[in-house]
Image 1 (cartoon, rainbow, N blue to C red):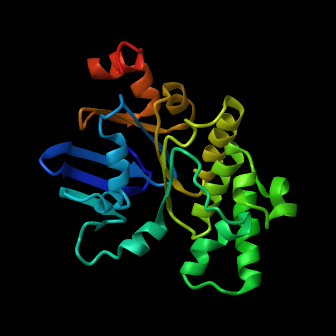
Image 2: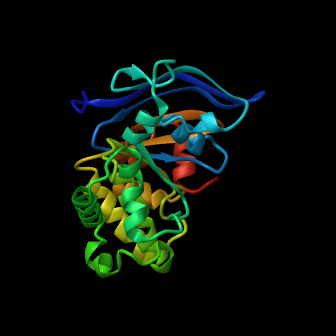
Length: 254
C-alpha cells in the first residue's frame, strides 16, 4: 500500500486531435515528491499526456478531452479552473533549453514580475534562491546581467529549471530535458532532479531507459496512446507483468 500523497489522479482520459485519438482511457496516479518517468517509443502519447497535466494541449486547435485529470482532488478541466494559476503550480521544462533572449536575471524574474512581485530586494532574493537550487549561482552570480544565450547548453537548461522554480510551483513537468545535452550536463541535471524531488513532484518524459531506471521512483510505459503498465520503477524494470513492457525495456522494439 502506498502511503505517499497522490498529487494527480487521472481517470479514463481520452484525448483527440480532431478525429485522431492520441490518448485512450489513460488512468494513473502521480505521487507527491516523487519522480515519475513516462517511457515508450516515439509517437506513443507520452508528451501529449504530459501536456494534459497543465493544459498545454489547450493551445492546439481541435483538441478535445474526455475523462478526469484531478490535481489535489480538483479536476483541472473543470470550467472554474484558472489556467494561469494552474500553470504557476504546474511548471514545464522543454526538450531544448529555451531561455528568453534577455539577461540571466530577467529570465528568472520574468514570472514573479508577471505575478505582481516588483520589489527589487524580493526579486534579488528569488534569483539567488532559485539559481542556488539548480547549482548555477556560483557559475553566474557575477554576470547576471549578461545574456542567457551566452552560457552553455547545460547551464541554459538549469536556468530554465530555475525560471520555472521562481514562481514556486508544486510540480515540474519535463519533456526529455536532457536529450539535447552532453553526458556530463545530463548527469548534472539527473542529480539535480533527484535533489529537487525532495521538495517538488516531477514528471519526466524520457527516451533514455537507463535514465528512467536511475532517477525515477515510478514508471509508466506508453504504447499507441495507452498505458500498458505503470508502477514502481524497480518492479517494472526487473519483473514487468506485461510482455510488451519487457520487450520494450530489453530493446526489442522502439
